[in-house]
Length: 92
Image (cartoon, rainbow, N blue to C red; front, side, top):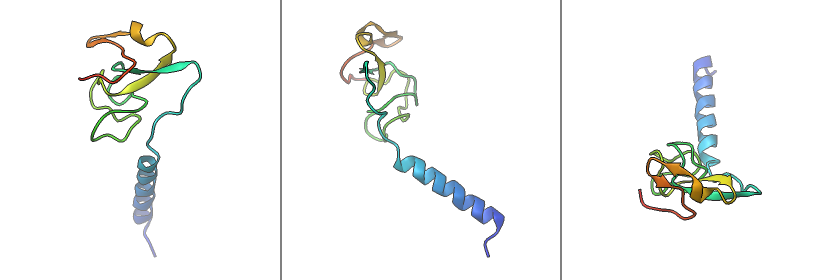
């Protein structure tokens, strides 16, 4: 017979495992485009480089290889402390 704490621990592990298994890009959104280098750490929609799994896994603010969806034709107008948004991955 399992104790309540053992069952709770098993439930937590299962929940965490399920979250990791489903990490992936945010689904395409009509009227939006991918904009690189504009998201805060952990707020990206996908593509965050080596050592990350995807959405929500960027490790730095304005990480150049992490993108976020924005309204079409607005990406290149977005300014950050590290420069403008980009339609393709950039360094840094």
